[in-house]
Every structure is written in C-alpha cells, then in structure tokens.
Amino acid sequence: MSCKTIFDCTVPFHLKAHFERSHFKEVDVKRFLPDFE
Image (cartoon, rainbow, N blue to C red; front, side, top):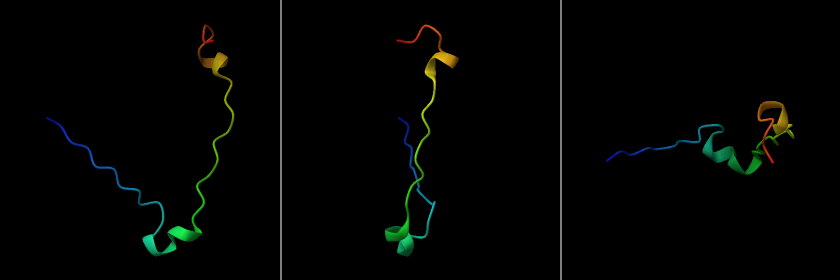
C-alpha cells in the first residue's frame, strides 16, 4: 500500500482569500503529439 500527501504551500493560509492561481496558457498539442486528435 502506498500513500501520498499533497501540501499546497503556495501562500500562507491567512492570506488564502487574496490568492489567485495563475492561468494556464493554451498549448498546441499537435506540436508535441502530431497524431493527437
């Protein structure tokens, strides 16, 4: 059996209300996977 714990230590907990996660950019998948549909 295995277990994984994930900690989101990006921002101090008391500032979490002011935290905004960055947005991901669009990626051209065909550049990396030419056969991808």
